Amino acid sequence: MKNIVLFPLLLSLLVVLFACKKEVIVTGTASPLVSLNDVRALYKGTPKVLTKEDMLGASYINGIVISDPVNGNAPEGLVILQSFKRNLLRGIALDMGTEATNYNPGDSVVVKIDGKTLDRINGVLQISGVTADDVTRVSVGNPQHINLTTTTFTAITRWMETFESTLVSLRSIISLDVEEGDVFSGTVTLSDWSNVLRLVTHPTASFANEAVPGFGDYTGIMLKNNSEEPVLMLRNSDDYKVQALEPYHPQELYFGFPESWETPIGPRKGGYTTGQFENYDSGEWRMTRCYTLSSNGISHKTGSFALMMQASQIAVLEMNFNLPYGASKFSFDYGPATASDTNYPLTLKVEYSQDSGDTWTQIGSDLPITAFQKHTFEEDLDISGPVRFRISKDASGSRVFIDNIAVYQN
Image (cartoon, rainbow, N blue to C red; front, top):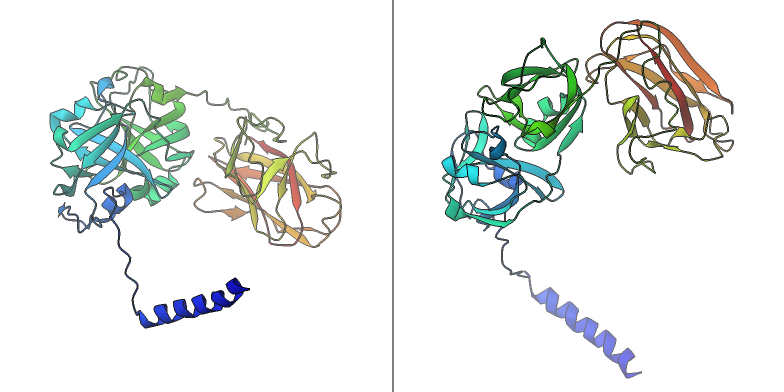
């Protein structure tokens, strides 16, 4: 009974206390570390001396070294550092001159940058004046994370600030104008079938005299050149993998098709919003508000698996890769996912892109779904050159399944 009486009294005292105090002062110690994203944001086009005041009281950055001086293809005099902060992976270059060769991939370091200068030199945003006395090596052999894995250069060219001085992985890339006997040393032009960027290799690189593949996968450090165009630097011979370009057979199915979602390479998404991609022999598929599953309720699927698009949401299934020889025909099965998906009409749209997904052209009219049955879309085409496709669903209130996607060379 006493507690019941005291509680209203205590509550009243608290109300009076906070009503009389116009400002509540919060004190504490600022973090000594500033994120690389915040440091990069301080550069406004002219040299900037970094101060504690600029960095909210911080004096240091930390991260993992990704440059590889041992294999001879690191940017001269620079240590490339990348770091996670607030779920953002960002990078920066440290100008350390001859001391740069003392830091290896996987080194975890803390670097004092208070009083150093931030500037873009020879295209690369970097912090100059850093010496060995400013760097503490915390550990070695740490994992080096990939900031972007993609089959197209679109994101890189649009948001270069996001990827500069970080590791990116480019898949299914062609090397333009490569002839038999050409080696990595020098500059190689890479293409995603639409856009181009340069691959730069020093003559001192351990792989400089290895043959350039006509088609392959590349992982390396994304930088800018003097013209502030994106360039890629591999670190060692493990950073590239030779791929075999599919033979040209007009009117025949592309390798890996029809795609029926039975055998992924790697994990499935497992949900509408868990992850973005699933990989198959056909290629890497971007799945927005959709995923593959083996529910017995999907009555009209072929085999065990089908792709299902979410109800009441715009859902998109998109190739994250280009097919090199155009398309003479495109087809797939579709319909309501289960017998309970009766919120008709449902509507699909089919499109193709020939610039790696920058712009899209619709094929035919919208596809309305008004009954619980399997439908088949099949369209003869005459598309020449690299192409990719996507299928999108409107925000109608039922789910849709997609299965047996087939693309034929032109």
